Amino acid sequence: MQSRKDNNFKNKTIRNDDTSDDNLEIFDVIIIGSGPAGFTAGTYTSRAKLNTLIITGSLPGGQLMTTSEVENYPGFPNGIFGPELMMNMRQQAERFGANIVDDEVREVDFSVQPFIVKTHAVKYISKSILICTGASPRKLGITGEEKYGGRGVSYCATCDGPFFKGEDIVVAGGGDTALEEATFLTKFGRSVKIIHRRDTLRASKILQEKAFENPKIQFIWNAVIKKIEGDKKISKITIKDLKTSEEIGINTGGLFVAIGHEPNTKIFNGQIEMDAHGYIVLKENTKTSVEGVFAAGDVHDYRYRQAVTAAGYGCMAALDVEKWLSDKLK
Ligand code: NAP
Image (cartoon, rainbow, N blue to C red; front, side, top):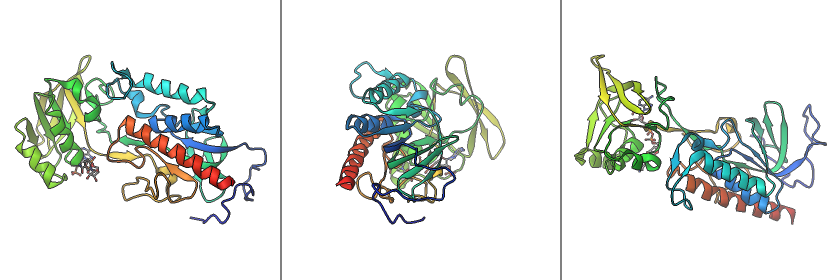
């Protein structure tokens, strides 16, 4: 990565771009991503009178746009639908003057100041950047998965577990998340079957022991899920035994897919530091390895992954951006 010699945006950096930046508006902050982290950050930065642009990404509102009821976001004692919650957050950011464009960032350049952010057709420049692109749960990619998403197929036990009281639940995966979620789901379900594609688990020993000891948990080894069926909601899955190739139907009221997450960081490859899994590494509070570039939410937090924690990180990052900009302008 090219090092930035001059971090003072009062002096414009000269670049050999084909497009002149002379007529481009310089934003104080561009927020990339529009889940709870992005919209919360946008509310804080625009309310602090920072010229803010939020570029939403291909799914404006993020993961919560594909969920149904959210029961654990504070302030909504009767719950709220995910899309409604996100629309409220968007309107709250807009109320204070955040500019929002529904577009996808294709390319960034963090080696120059002001930073460059490009969508398919438009180039934007900004003094600071806040990355809130989140992480996406890995999908099984099988028949019925999309159709029954939010109708029995879930990617978050903490979020959706309480909706599955008394059900026979299936969990796919053999890592820490699968075992942790399966154990949590035994609080609600009548039974929990863990379906894993091998005969050894990737999960830590302590989680394995807990799961093996739990009378409600049963393991199905060397098997993959082939198909999800149902009517209004999921009622059955078909699994394939990888040793015998036999296909077996299992009745279920809920399938939790826990086969890992992918942080949405491909466009930042080579520009900022990430860990081996592609999560952004934070250096100090919400600062990344590039001065003036911040990150908030699931894009760095692989542990909690909750709407409320993402919103909290969004707030923290917005305050860090504000402080960083005011220090630079002194
Ligand atoms: P993970 O460790 O990557 O495990 C994913 C699991 O899903 C693996 O067992 C994998 O099988 C299976 N899998 C992947 N793709 C599949 C597919 N297409 N079909 C069927 N199975 C598939 O992911 P994770 O469990 O979400 O954990 C992510 C990270 O967070 C890990 O570093 C983990 O230690 C950490 N974490 C820690 C805690 C904790 O400490 N309490 C809790 C949660 C997560 P194979 O084993 O065959 O590859």
